[in-house]
Length: 601
Image (cartoon, rainbow, N blue to C red):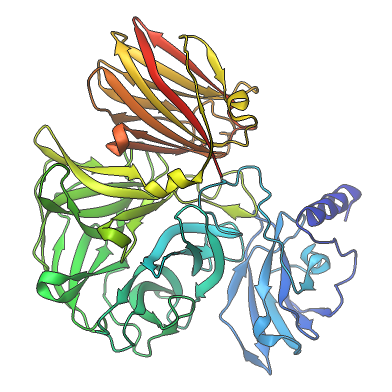
């Protein structure tokens, strides 16, 4: 190993609370190299973790824990370090504490760096150190994350499960990671709740609180549903499996009758389950190719096909995924309508993945779209996907979370120890506009409790830049801005977030077209993907008054126009926080009636 690489590894290890190990395997580890890139790591007196060094661009190696000549777990795919160490991940050995085991490692050469950098440890440093890691958005403590799964509320706690790779920050080894929160803003990582088994890895799904013990696992048991995804030499298959928890979602037992639902369709996934009170039965919505299928059950175990929806409705630029079917109030009326949320990849309005929705009626068995000629988008940014809602939310609320990324570049974004964040929580409702019913996504009220400091700007001059650093007495890139602007005849009202490195995000309201625009092409690091630099456009409420809430959090901007009637979510990677906002107008003037900045914690 050359000096430069050795120094890099030592510095990275120190940054993560670890120590580079030198030329020999660590204490308690003995490595035997076999033919054809096969190896055995003998562990003497297992500690809680075997810390594995990862190189993100290395080929995958296959690992399996073996005790008494029997495989103790399913195979894990890990990009073990060959020439450099990007970060470490923990292989959990807590079930074997103090015992002698072996780890079968296939597909990694003898001379690779990983053999010198593995070590046993009783701790793993999960400190929030990366500069792009958000302050007030949920992220995985380490590893890859995509779709939110199994979300429910019970006894004052919100439970968020998520697609998680605990062995690297690229997609793979799908499990359900688990985080909890009492305020929808600050999250505690609870470990991995559901692991792969003989039926495959654990894809997306949902969970319900079975208040009346319809499944027989106990009153108020948590019953979860997910897609078991199995690969074989004959091809990939997907089927639905069931788990249940009698301790409030901390641990799950897999149902002995799994899988509970199968199909000959290749894409057959993402079960979203809810109780349909008028029919006194459960409903499951499944994404099947480019349609949604609906099933019914009285006991959560036995399911009957009812109907399908999708042909000639909405966008069909890619596969349909992650459905949700919810009943929402229409603002200002006593009416309600059903909304079918349908995530699609690719096929979004600005490329890659996005979330569309349909508004109509549902009779417990069939969904009917009231507006079949128009495609409706839930968010007009590039980074809002896999959006689903919490089951059993308090006070009749419908609270949604999305995955804040895009499949075009999710694995290339410039983070290392973790990848991806969730959006802030959003309360959903419907509103009428020009004879149409549209979905409103308002920032959930809990975000206001995260406000730590408030500053108002009393006077404004078009053309000036206002220092966020000075207003907030320091700026870590995590804040909210509320704007109310009166247009005095200007064609465009522009407001730009910028930093001292010349990086900026340009936003403007176009009065003539009634559109809100965000341009992130000069936002910071963009070179990792040609699909990342982009200008996104949404409709906006017309009139002389323009209201906007911006949530900026180190590597993301979420814009809510007119209380959430139109929303735009884009991730960004500035080299330093945006520290000023500049106001400009085109052919005319405007008045900033209100500008308030809140530091968020």
